[in-house]
Image (cartoon, rainbow, N blue to C red):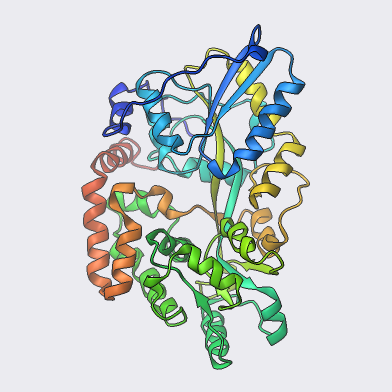
Length: 433
């Protein structure tokens, strides 16, 4: 792990994280069954996983006489969490995604260092690397247990592919040739659903990880390169995808795209595995497959776009850390991992003999080989609204203006990050840690 001195809690940083939020949460009384036990509180952000977390809570409490687990799954978990942090009322355990919040929490010193703990023993090393890549600058320690990941690339209609004899492409030329062939047979190659701006990020991320450095945001912050240089080809290929999308892709949103793809109106849908439950809700019998986005020139250069969708961290302020660690051990038990990834159609970040959804069959070799890179938008601050920038660019087609704005907005919204990066590299001129 990195060997930079661990930071002290920064009240100012926590306040900055929470700026503009309304303080509006009150504590709840303990249930009778918790009396006499060590109570461990958790806030987790996966509202769509409410049922599985209710089951986890029930199973844990039924199997532990001395610890009572209390899980909250609010609809706006991160806002509530940050409110509680500024009030110094942190939950014992935080369940959240692998995004910019992780780096903010690490910098604020509010997460327990799990280095050396057995809760990390089963974690796939590739996901520990992804976790470290989320930090603005290298920081000594590992502050979360990666739990479940999603995989993004291209979903495809397996029955349609088999019926027409289409083969999965392994590079960009094969992909565009396939799209041309599909069009020539009178079928829509892709559905996009770009009315919802966030859907623009799905293909963007999957293309960007193959055509730009995985640490491009760090390199740009350090003045080594620019987004205009690193994202030019990414932008070009995003534009090329429009040739194969539905007419008026900006008039249809995510739900429309899921419904249309599920109805057989397109052969493919550039989205992550997280969309599968939504698609199957309208067509439970659909035979869906997926493959890695073939944006590069050869199969050897292909990388799976996979990021940490759920991880668990223990608050540094937790008064019963051993009890909290016992909860993480329980979560890491094979049966609980399997139940979660089955319910959420996700990939385990823990190594084990798990059954992964057949939808992800073509992606498993990349996961096992560690040929993965995180979603680059996990490093973009929300204030930049990169999804809206991409949508605007795809509508007006002005690539140069888009890339120029990307660089300008990075500086505008990341001054603190840029300073951290440049201070770090100044202190480590030869790349030593």
